[in-house]
Image (cartoon, rainbow, N blue to C red; front, side, top):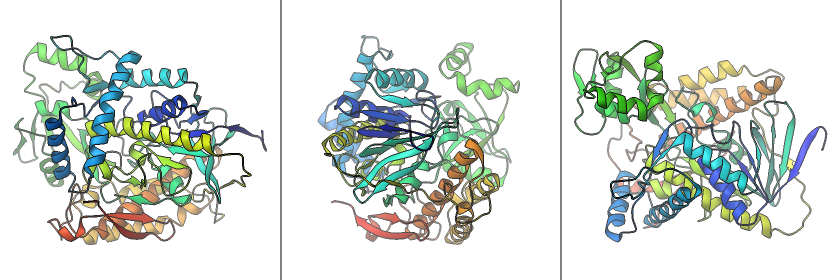
Length: 521
């Protein structure tokens, strides 16, 4: 105990308790490391995966099938992926899902009794991962958000945070830290995204790490206007109409995200699940997707017969591909001792400039968790005794450069105005991006003020700072990529530019710098 702060020693600290964090903690522990996992919420129920379900990139080890999958991803990712990394994901997730079944996950079986390992139900999956992590000997700190990293001239060496329930401060000293804090959805009310505020990106940047792919961070999910579920599988059974009665979608092919977005610019858009046209189909859907129907039932709406209003919720880097830049196969960052996994990490090497969540990000969470955990364990257990002069490196939202207390509610509302609207982040133009960047630049000195008091105030102040930092990186990167590639569509430059088949690497907080990094041929 130091100055009323509980101090623990470990070989590896994992920050974040979603699937990537759980896999990283398990992987590090099974490689012989002493592991502590600290989660902002409750390991097993917080984050975007736990309340829903995820498809996975589960392909048998058939060379032709896998080469086809790699080719499709290269095209979809705007030629920014690396085939070797796509193959790594396909190989590793295939073996990992066998493990999940051995641990006790009840995969549905086909008529021949073979397990269908291409889908995981979030609640069962994450409940299982909590048990697996604890059985591996990991110390779990629930409701314990990390606020800042510790570092010295040797690199990162742990983190500090606070226990939400008791108010006690904690400190974990570990030579290896895995940031698996998820992406940033800017508190846009997507299901499970309330804890995804970009905290890990800010902590990494404060320690000197770089970011990459931040222009590919403008994903939106479609949901009921009064709902939070942005998983759109059931909407494939809907007829969707614009305000003037024009049919935007009638079940013909993939859900037209672009068409829905354009229709929403003109007025309300409504849907009705009219192609679930028998009592048997409706009962099956209610059983298999119960969470989807909750907002309708609460309002007394029958979504199979009554039209309901749609909206598009900004999911930012959660379903994008931008994040902390990785420099090695073990998900190492450019800072010694610091690793990143899941949505906190840049997924460009395997996803390129387009993701969409589901199969791609769920598979990446498993693989990057395993890789980072193993690499962090090797590093953390190999570092010999040495004197560390660790100091906290947190800035905005933790330490004040001004005596003025940050009004976090006002900051969050302001940063949302510069990120959430379709006209800012979906229909990108140079002029609107410049205005949004100017707005978020003006917020940066504001979040360097005095954090709000109390545990909730301290956490909210840090989240507000992380959202402002993330928004600035997104807008800087989007303005720097003067072309259309992947999910980044810029009105003034509607086509890909072959000269820009490179990554954009960002660094810095007060002043954001951009450099290019070539993609291996």
